Every structure is written in C-alpha cells, then in structure tokens.
Amino acid sequence: MLHKAANVIRTTKAGSAATAAAKSGAEASGSMVVMARVLAPYGIQGWIKARTYTASIAALLDYKTWWLAPAGDAEAWREFAVRVARQHGDTLVAALDGVADREAALQWRGAWVAVPRSALPEPVAGEFYWSDLVGLIVGNRAGETLGRVTKVLETGAHPVLQVESEDGGERLIPVVAAYVDAIDPAAGRILVDWPADY
Image: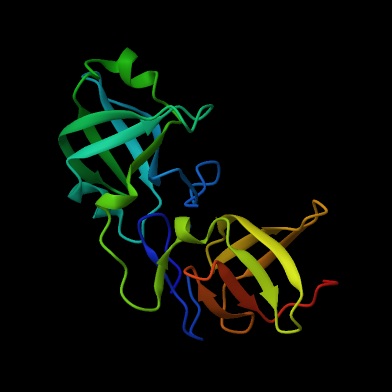
C-alpha cells in the first residue's frame, strides 16, 4: 500500500493508494519528511490551519515539534514547538511557539510542515515511505532503465510515480499491482511492467 508523506507503500501486488516531494506534498528534503502544508492563519492568536498529506489526518498530532519551510525555499527549515494542535474537519489547526498573532501566522501561508525522517516509525516489511522512493531507479521487465523517481503524485485513486529519464523525458507510472512488480529501496530500484517506448 502506498501512503503519503509519513505513511507507507505496500509493495505487494495489491498496490493501492507520497515525496514526500516538498513541491508536490510527496517528497522530502534531505532528512525531513513533508507531512502537511499550511493553508492559512486560523483566528487572530497566531494559529495556523494545515492540510495533511498523511493517510490519517490526525497522524501529525503525534509530534510535539514541527518543522516549517517557506513554499519558495524547501531547504530553509525552522523548528517550532507545538503548544496546542487538534483536528478541525479535514484539516489541522495548531498554535506554535513563536507565532504570536495572525500577521506572524500569515507569513507561513503555503509553508511545508515536516518532521525529521528519524522521528518516524520504521515501516513494516513490504511498506515504504513515499520519501524513500524519490531517487530510486525504475527499470522494466525487459531490463531497460526508464529513469529515476522525482516525485510521488497523489491522484485520489492511487499514487503515481513521476519518473524522469536521462534525456529529460517524463513518465507517469501508476502504483498499482498491474504495473509495479517490486520496490527495493535497499537496492535503489523499482521494477515495473512498463514498456520503454510508452
């Protein structure tokens, strides 16, 4: 099963619904794993409202420290202690130390919310974090290299690997049993049933 951000991908043939890409909400930057994105300030006392990229909206509530980076600079992480956070419909709202009023919260609109990769629990056998897939080489059954995973895209029905070839071409490969045979982060490879000319 493929899950977003702080969730995992099951590599069995039951492929189902990650980079953690900071730009897409499914990639990670360095050792940070993007878990959410700040939508807007919430109220006038410095609270933020965030949309999570996790299978469970409440998953981010388990962490007492969040790291935020401006949307335009996914490398400029800043640590914030979480004073209070709770689920609010399909979002989270939180009060962070150092964000005292609506104007301060407004500066973080669009920011990425992450936690260090080391803070996440190890996935069980056969499951992987989206962020662990970014950079893996994708090859097909014919032994041809199709490229590297640059992002894991959320499509609603199932995740999709964005694969960039050496010549700059791009493929979008659905993470479903019909196309993904195996994911092996230790070997740095994903095996797919996907022709090189498609």
